[in-house]
Length: 524
Image (cartoon, rainbow, N blue to C red; front, side, top):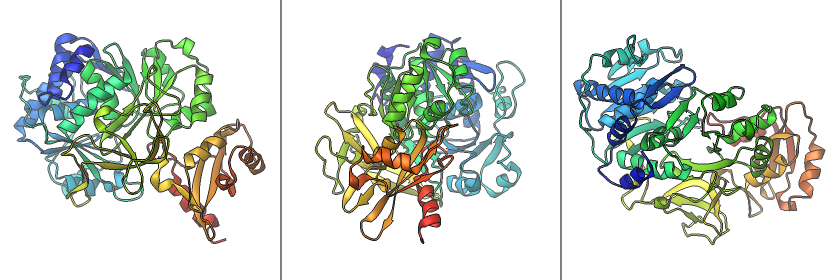
């Protein structure tokens, strides 16, 4: 499948996941679709279609229809991806639950979802299937293991006895395709609901933004329980006939071995991973892996200093991407379209704007909140802890992210609105201060927070962690900042730690840092 096919299907309501599955199986049935580096096995496009057709017949035999939910308690694997894509291709609503992050909420989530079927990974000790199956609705079934010949187990053992006759999708364009859960770091997790239209219309523009072709092999380690990996590295390759190199989780020591061994052309990463490669360098250069077109970075703003240092060290181009849970990918770039310091140009159909607190668009070059919504009928929905569907926003969505639009139409994401520091009426972006600290050669990580102040309302506090084998002093950091930051942005306190806390998605956990600061210094 080439770019012509993608252009023909974009925005067409009749397009379905089943169309992409069938086209790939017909065009190159023996080409590998998913290569699992941990499972040491692969599934071809032809084999994938066979699994999906049998899965459709199985789900039909279970009486699963439009908007009926299939819950998944499993991690990255060929089996997980086959259900995620194959279940939606049939027309079920596939609900992905992060096993590690949502473990304490399993019972609450499943009772909110009311799934007809729950598939679980029996090797995962966080899942007490015997107890949970008695406390939650629907049938429970071990996900099991897919095998190209005999020996399949669990669900895949059941599928071997099913017909492979294609089944027409039971759902329509506006019905629910997927529900995926937030991490629940600060409160109970909520389920983000996306329709088939939202999911499918986000996919080809994302694949095009990556410059993805059928010849690409995209390495992905991020959890396929969230829309970020699901669209970028799952549905994107499916839509164009590319190959997924699938890892169960990030490995700093094995990442470039995977790139080399499996001839990856695009390597997915995030700011934390790139920083780890700088903190504990790997002896490799782009000259050793010329097939690697570029690496991506998303999930949090990539500090320009980290970006610059990584490219200088490894010679591998980095291209930022940007998205949010409610809507999927917002901006995606590649080695040719990237612009340093930005996430590139937003996908046109999102109609992105930068607005002030009153919702009015700010002038070019001014910081504001990122707002979007390309469809007049959009309702951004989520499922609450009681199973009630709620509307988060209609028509236009405020993302909660701060950004600046430059003269080329590229967006620089500067952080979260909730993290913005307001000192004496002046807005200070923590990310901008972070980047100044990261210019110090010995600094591996930096995080700036605002803390209460009786005079100015908030004051600037910086946390920093040294690179492995390096030492840092507060005097050194203050001296560096004093010649690069205006007085009102200067940190009033520097705190050095061996390591700074992250969220499960690799973002700097400023909320936890604020809590730690309050506990340690708030009463002094």
